[in-house]
Image 1 (cartoon, one colour):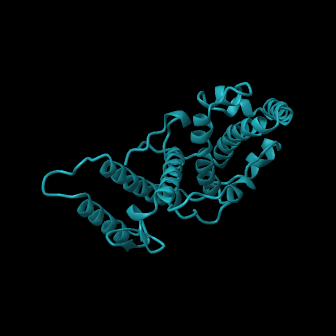
Image 2 (tube, helix red, strand yellow):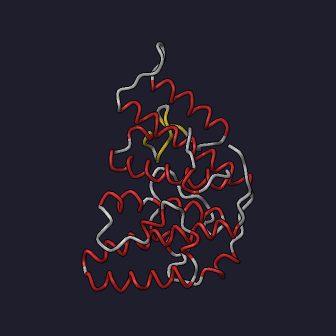
Length: 240
């Protein structure tokens, strides 16, 4: 990964863009309950986007979503894009507003992140106060997120019926990788040859809990790769 140093201001602007995306999704949901309320919130969003120049911060993929008309967003879009809250949480952590990265075996609660998002607020004061934490700390966290993402992908491969090379097994592959990650401090501990999740091996989490964690892990890895790389937001890769 070719490295760059994202400034605190650049990170804050990206958080503002994600805030606009998340607001748009929530307005869509609100409009389904009460059309008049949805229209009022939509007008407020458009005013904020223009007045604070947040529109200039949106990525090419975000802009059509944020500017879509009420009723145009699908359930699938709302569900998948709402996970961007987890990416926003990782960025909030990277400027020191969350003192520690929340645990990876569950998603960050919305309330944990939302207080730090500039929803309908002036952007420039928000941008001015953002200071990125030290790069080695971010890089170490990126490595941790990548390992968790690798574990998600190995589990998916197993569920899809894939098999490792002859003479190996997923159990053995995971056990070796987890032991190495514990030894190097990437993860805190192991349970039955897997990542320890409060006494439960990661691969044995209930399906709903596993899916929740997996979606959060992928978004955090995405945000941390953006922080440590030089790709535009829409072009970030999350190889493991």
